[in-house]
Length: 204
Image 1: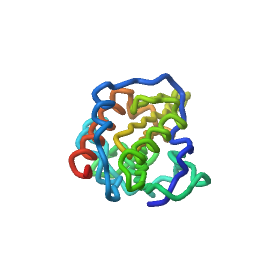
Image 2 (image 1 turned 45 degrees about the vertical axis):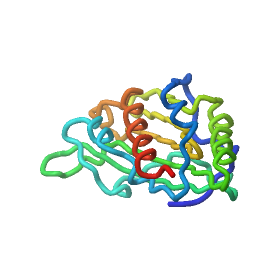
Image 3 (image 1 turned 90 degrees about the horizontal axis):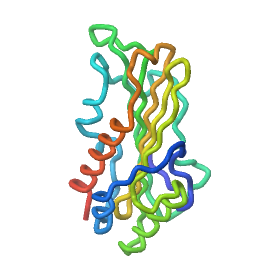
């Protein structure tokens, strides 16, 4: 899915304090991404490595879930390119049959500012991180709190050059407690993997 988002739009909900990454800050200074980015191609091995044993991927529409408000659609404007991807994983009942009452939804959004000037585009991306998350560093993680049914959510955002990458992970279902909830370490690993893919495959 591709659309656009206002520079000042909220990228992700914020429920906890920032976790900063000095190495990511230095990497973001010189990066520039001139072409459209396929959000579905960013997630690497860490996305599967962090799943519980006996988990299978199923079509994203297999379970009716609330859309993660990674980028509000009512704040769209020109000057940026948004691509997003939703992936759904469920506990395997055996033989690859998924338990759709015990699932994990991963939503990825990539906002790429398209100003022809690399410095201007990077400034706009930095402003989105600041406006949305109150973070100048280029990295932000937040964690939700699971309820009595085991439902939990995790969010993360990373800025690199003219791109802000957002990630939301939600575990849910009536048997959600059977899938160990994702942790900040899980989210950090997935975001780092996606950022490395960005810099390797899309940087100009």
